[in-house]
Structure formats: structure tokens, C-alpha cells
Length: 454
Ligand code: UDX
Image (tube, rainbow, N blue to C red):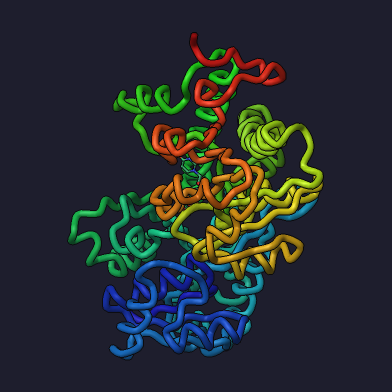
């Protein structure tokens, strides 16, 4: 089939490449010429394992092209995936739909759209409930035969190619049998491989995405709230999470405590969900999500507070080494990165802060030019008064704590991701502290921490 993919960010670039891999003839569209140049040269504009190979293969097979022209896109195919961003509006937290609307308007202004009776716009961007219906009305004002479907995407950055080629489900929000048949045709290879296809109305499809992200965020904030309780009663949150996760009704995934969630999706999606629910008069139904957000933000402040106490109560004249800038491992995305938020808060409180990340330094420097960055862990840790482990890259777990102890001024580490081996690090002379694991760390009166057992 011939398809266009409008918007080539994390979602659209991967979707375009995967659609070409599935055998479709794909045209990717974006307003950013630099991005289109990179994709045309099979260079992913961001770090995403496996994407470069797919871009090459798609280009070589002649099934994957890119353009900045929406008019060209309108003429290229009858099926258009909308994958543009829906950023957070600063004041209200609601989703900004201007990019989605601009894409739809640009398509409809093309004379060719809708003339053959089969144009289908398939939204993949995360949008407030009711968007598909509103877009359908907008579209039909100029293109009477055009239709809108919603097909939310659940890919995770860092495993986006895998998630797109082997999704756990395909959710198809449709307004007509014709639209459902088109979606089934597009995803035929996945359906043949047994991927469940859940067909529903567009409002439910939009809601599946919002509810899924809200649930994941709630699960993370739940275990982080339990970490706060553990700190107060000298219990251990990692053991608590393991024991809770062993119950198949709960499950271990998204129950890793620590610094909380960040990135371009979970934080903004729960805020947009709350804003939309409030618009609908449903503030009470989603009030808990405000608490989920607040618990999440609090983990950043708690980590800063813990580090400050460890360096003697003030960051003035202290040198802080930060391991990690990306919002999670396997990505160079620093949008709403908990690691960078902590690094910047520590800097603003007077510390000299040096940050390491294996992939995200360029993006982090652009977002926080006032921080110092280096690609060498030893350089970042040189003469540090405390090391903060803030993004769970596997390379940090593989560090030699004995060698690193020689480099720092004081061998103290805050393991805010709970993945360093406390035994190995303490044997190498480190004081290792982790939120929700007070027994690892010397007791501190202000924490309300009971302290290690005698
Ligand atoms: C998320 C959803 O998982 C995905 O389905 C949706 O399409 C987009 O949003 P992503 O933003 O790529 O994907 O990241 P994800 O892997 O979900 O992690 C989100 C954040 O939660 C990260 O900051 C991660 O470090 C944090 N996290 C995750 C935890 O703190 N604890 C956990 O147990 C899991």
C-alpha cells in the first residue's frame, strides 16, 4: 500500500521505517528540512537502536522516501498517518493540537485530497478524547469523502523498532467499516503473526493510550511513595517491589523505584489527561493523577535533599558528579529528564556539577548549557564530593567501584536508580545511599530514618 507518515519525530520516523519494512511504499513528511535531510541519508536524527538499519533497507528497496512537502504527500497516497507532536501548553498543561490541525489543514488545502472517495487520516499522536471526531468534522468541511481513524502508538523509546514491529496489540478506533478494513490491510503481516487487533470507536482508542500511560505513571509513583514510607521505617523498597511484583496480579514491570518518570510522554500525557477531564467536568475522577505527578516531582527534590545532606548540608564549594542525562537508558532524549532536573537543581544551589552520559550529551548541553559535560566517567568524577547515579545505563552497573574510589575526593554515591551493587560498592570503600533503602546509608536525624539495625 502507499502511505504517508506526517511528522518524523520519535514516533513518525520509526513508524515510517517500520511500515516500509512491512512492505508498504512510504513517504515521510516533516516541516524540518534538516531532519528530512538526515532521514533521506538514512541517518536517524536521534539515538534509537535498529532504526538506521531499517532506514537503509527501506531506501535501498525504494520503499521509503522523505519530503518537506505536504502537497506532495496529499498526492502520494490516500492513507495518511498523523504522527506530529502534541506538546504541553505551558499554562494549562493541556495538549497543544496546533501541529495536528496544521497537518490536517495543509492536506485538505490540496486539491487532490478526497476526490477519489477513499482518503483516510489515521492519527497516532497522543491526543485529548474527542480529537478524532473534531478533526473529522474539520476535514469533511472541505473533503466530503475523507475519514479519520485513531490508532494509538505504545512504543517505548530505546525499543521503538521492536515495539512497532512486534506490538502487544493494535488498537483501531474507527468510524466506518471501510476504515477498519484499511487498517487491517496495513497491519496484515502483524495480524498474520497473531498480534491482537482491538477494533473500537475513536474516543475509546484515544482513551486507551491516555489510560495506559496514566496507569504506568501511577504504578511508578506508587512504588516511589512506598520508598518514602520505607525511608521512615527502615524498610527496603527494592525488596518490597520484588516481593510485590512476584504476585502476578501486580507484576514486576514499572515497579522500579527511584527518581521517577520523565521523557516526552508520561509527564505531559497525564497533565493533558487531567486538563481534558477537567474540561469535561470530571476533575474528581482524575484528581489522583495530580498526586501521581506531585509524587513524581518530589522524588527529584528528595534526591537533591539527600545529596545535599551527604555533602554536609550545603552545595557551596562542592563538586558533584552526575552519571546520566537521558530521561532513561537507551535514549538520547532529555525532555523532562529527571537526571538533568536534579543536576540543574544542584548547580543552582551552588555546586560545581559535571555530567556524564553515553548518548545524550549533545542534547543535554543544548538544554542546559550552564552544566559541564564529559564523555569520560573518570573525568566527571574527578575530585567529586558525591556521585549521583541518575540514569540507569548498563555501563554504570559495570563500573569498577574500587578504581572510581581512587578518582573522587569522597567515595559517596547516591544510587537513585537502585541498580548499583551495594555490596561491591561498600567493599570498595563507598558509602552508597539510595532513596527507600535507609539501612544502606548512615542514619540521619532529619530524614526521620531509623537507621541500620544494631
Ligand atoms: C512511554 C510508554 O511506556 C509508551 O507506551 C508510550 O508510547 C510513550 O511513553 P517512554 O516515554 O519511551 O514510553 O518510556 P518508558 O520506558 O515508559 O519510561 C518512562 C519513564 O519512567 C522513564 O523516565 C523511566 O526511567 C521511568 N520508569 C519506568 C521508572 O522510573 N520506573 C519503572 O519501573 C519504569
